[in-house]
View 1 (cartoon, one colour):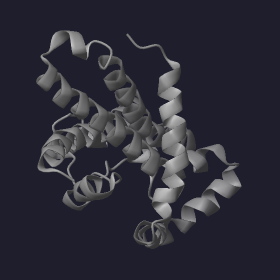
View 2 (tube, rainbow, N blue to C red):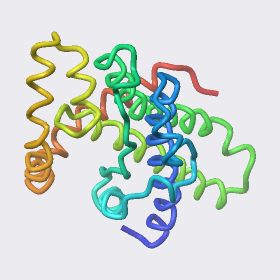
View 3 (cartoon, helix red, strand yellow):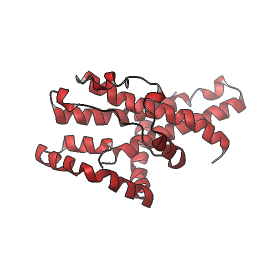
View 4 (tube, rainbow, N blue to C red):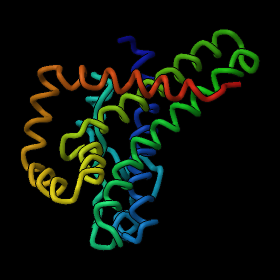
Length: 204
């Protein structure tokens, strides 16, 4: 990886994790939970969301995490549905961000000189890749990732409760998947699907 790529990746990563965590917090807040607001998480300031290890993983492996937004589901009218929506909000925000960045590729060549346009083109492609990668990683249905909350919300209540009890084993399993490379193989079809999804919508 070149120095230029690393320099371009840092703001892309900070943006992706900020949008992701802000969306979790805003969804919880809109559903009645004031906790994210009290924690100062309803902001796009990356310093409020940064997890150094998770950001480093994003730089090195294109998947990682931010500092989780604490949510109190007791404020939700429907706890299971509320947690599912909060879990979905982060990955969805990253997919929408990737789509918006993809839109900008259509008019870049006409606005900037060749050299500047090439750098911006690379920066936008990195933003697309990082946003899709962050969304895909978090959609893996292993606690404490967002995918586990989405799956628990879609399951019948009795199975969802059992599934959530397995959360204590989630971080260990997740580390095994990361260090064995299985996480990357799980992410690959998700990234491909999300990439096809954002390509369905028209560009400029």
